[in-house]
Image (cartoon, rainbow, N blue to C red; front, side, top):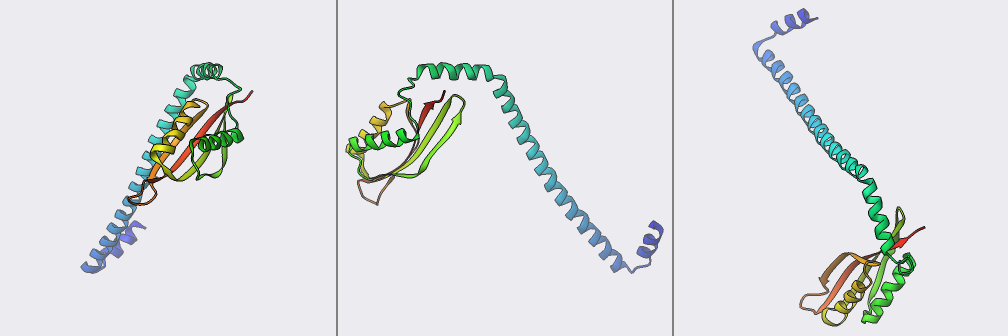
Length: 180
């Protein structure tokens, strides 16, 4: 087979030989490029997997400490003050009303995430046309007074319109419920 291919190659004209060599070189470069891409993807995935496994090994190694810390934290919380999803929405709405917030709207439903002996509830709010001095600071202070039972996970403040004292607040609040 190799003798036949060699005889075929040597029997060709110089320009045909150059063209065949060029096609073979292009094919080899194309293959090397694809191989290099696959190799780079493999090494990135390998490093990512290794770092994730290392992180997971740390969590597993510290499992006892984490569980003890969670038990200590749970013992400091008053189960009567922890809030479920409905209580979170009701309490935040009540705090907003007491602070003078008029345009508070929930966006989406309450999301509950189980976390061992806790359940973490989160709710998104959008408050439009709120003023900084009177209502926003009072609402924020009222939320902070309910810490650690209600916490602010995300707080995005933007101007409602250019040159307007009115603001728009996008807020994500969470509460912790002790589940037994």
